[in-house]
Image (cartoon, rainbow, N blue to C red):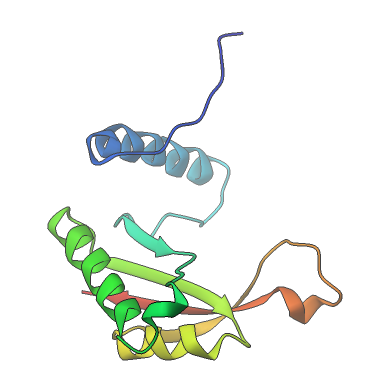
Length: 127
């Protein structure tokens, strides 16, 4: 077996990544799964944002998200997603003020005291 490693994807890797995703779509379709069959558009997901508290109140989170969206848009991404814990009101407000729409609730697979601790509110922005 050859060496196995991971690396941080870069924009030049996008063509090969999309080829792999297309192959995965074909395998899912062959398996009879509807997953990934109706949406071939790439999307960007924001999982974590942290701003130094010394700079609180300067709306840097909104600027950061705006810059991420602008950069991604210039590179062909038109769909953006954020999920956050239901108690994370700051991120929910940031997502909404950045134009994201609440789409529902998802569950992550992490150690938790109860099932709802794994609940995340899902937000989406389509441009």
